[in-house]
Amino acid sequence: DGGDGGDGGDGGDGSGTAGWVQWRRSVKAATGAAELKTAMRQLGDAVPAAEGRAGRVWRSSWWARLEESVTLPQLALRLLELEAAVWPRHGVVAGMPLEAAVQERDGSNREWVRAGIVSVWRDGSFRVRVRFESRSERGEWLEDYANPLSKQGRKERGAEWRWPQPPPEQRGRRSRAAG
Image (cartoon, rainbow, N blue to C red):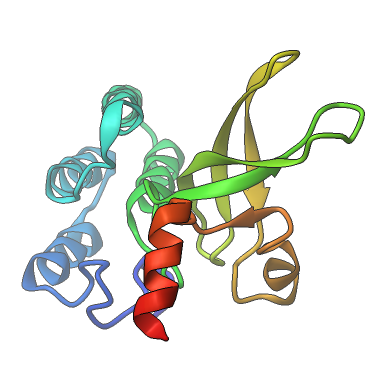
C-alpha cells in the first residue's frame, strides 16, 4: 500500500518479517491513541538503534517524546521520526558514514570531512550532521541532500558529499590487487 513506511519485501527494513506483519495488524486494529501508543512502544523495542552516542541520545529523546504524545497527530509524528531514523531507503540508512565537502567562509581550502547520516526520508533524501574544525573555524550543522538516485542527487554526489574513501595506503593496495 506504500503508506506503511516500508519499502515492501525484505530489503532489510523488516517489512517482510512475521513480526512486522503482526505489528501492522495491531496498528490497524487500534481504536484510539492509547492502543496505538502501545503498538508504537512495541515497534520502538523491535527496531535496531543507530550506533554510537548520537544514536543513543536520539533514541532516548524519541522515547521521551513518545511518552509525552497523547493525540493521534503526535503519535503519527513519532512514527515518522522512527521511520526516518531506522528504515533504509535506496541503500541509505541512518547511522551510515559519509564525507561532506566543506570550505572556509572565503571559499578556500575545500576539504572532505567525515559526517553521519541522521535521517532518511521516504523519498530517499537524507539529512547529515556535519562537524567541521580548522585553525580558524569550527562548527556543527545539519545538511539535507537529495535521493542519491535522483537527478539532483547524482549532481550532489561527488560534489557536495561522497561515500567514505579508504586511507591512501589501502587505495594503493586495492589498485595493485585489481591490476
